[in-house]
Image (cartoon, rainbow, N blue to C red; front, side, top):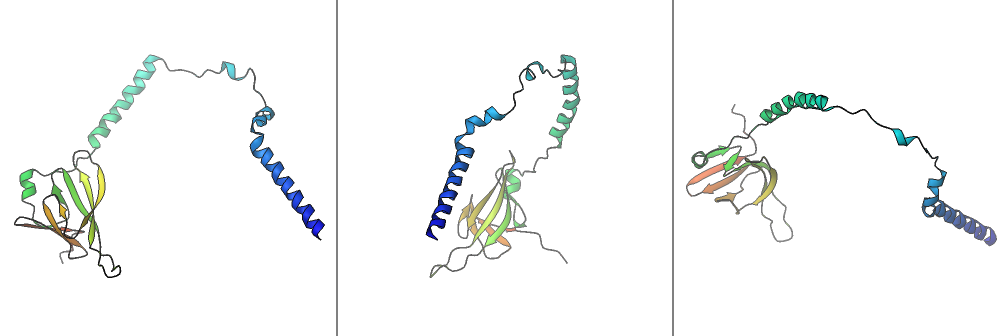
Length: 175
């Protein structure tokens, strides 16, 4: 019984060794087995467009390129005066060259004895270059000159001097 298990172990190890040798160690020899295409690849030449044809194709596509540039939408920005007049309930807040939209409000559960602060995730779009990022603001923190207060799961309160703003996640139905 021991002899059979010993012989089968030796046989399996020999097969594993042979497999490793064929797969990894004889990689150089594999190219010898591939058929050679001597003389065939030397005279392949693809047809080329002449300068006039290239120019006509470019001009035809320039029309579409110009339309695409016009189609890029610019996000509306607010002047500094208009930004200072923002108040009340808003679904988007303009501060400088940035547009803020409320994405989520998270109220973490208690961790031991310490209660973690609420935080909100805002989508920030740079009006000038349309770059978008997501930032995290914490209850009691600041965003630019605004003090942040999170009291609800659907809105964030901002206060700057005497102005009060509420950034809403969505506009409620006016039934």
